Length: 168
Length: 168
Image (tube, rainbow over all chains, first blue to last red; front, side, top):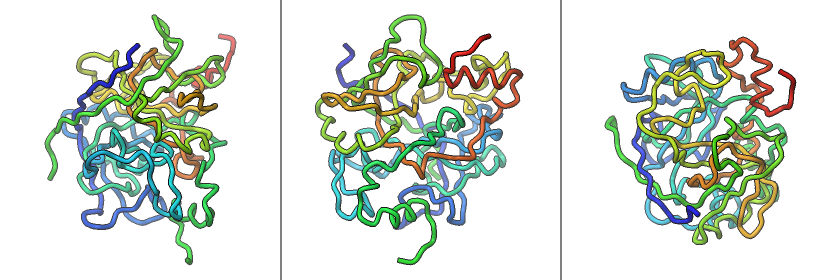
């Protein structure tokens, strides 16, 4: 069996421009917040964007380039009231392979730049891939919130995740 | 600007066991087909699986290890009646970075092995990451089928994608 660790090398295909240049970066895409992100492919890949604009939502895969070192396998996610959970039960960027994944609305394409709602990454995050989010494959009507449902103040937490303005 | 291609090295964290050992492999997860896949993490990562079982669906990210060479930026997807589309408007495994992404139902965890519905990959596909599919972040009620909606025989095509048994 193919049971040994192997190294795999990928090459960045572009970058993501966001307003997050300094100390603040939200934890997940915040649809209701104003502002946009731009997903920019290097020129040699731009021909592959044809027909993408027919999709309302896309997956953006990127390299969480500011992650450093060996991640812990047990983490304390933000907003989770100190609860400890397994790393793979979280979307924390510090992972054995720090590949970030966001589902974002594709608002329009301008000069081969994908204009999307805000993505929760630092400006100039290296891009690995773009894929269409396809209704029947990716939309799971009976999805749940997992362990988040057990967190005290869960409804408040969901408002944070959804980026809904609310009073504390 | 961070506008140069960079190489990034990842390390496989496990592998995916499926029944697809020879010439047949479906194109996308087929929920209604019988059979299961097993997502197996190497022992040093298994502690990170705690709490994952609270989620109904997970993302599985893997390396499409049987892809070879330079992908074309324009492709002719299966079932698309010969239509040519941009590579990034498709889920084709042959991509600049052949990172595969599937949303699958997590049926149960047995001895640190994730038992899921079938995943459309070759047996022993190298695993890169596992993430929870979180209701509010990943479930897009108004997602569409993009260019697939323009394909002649679109409803028939969707039945294929969904894995629904039907008469031709």
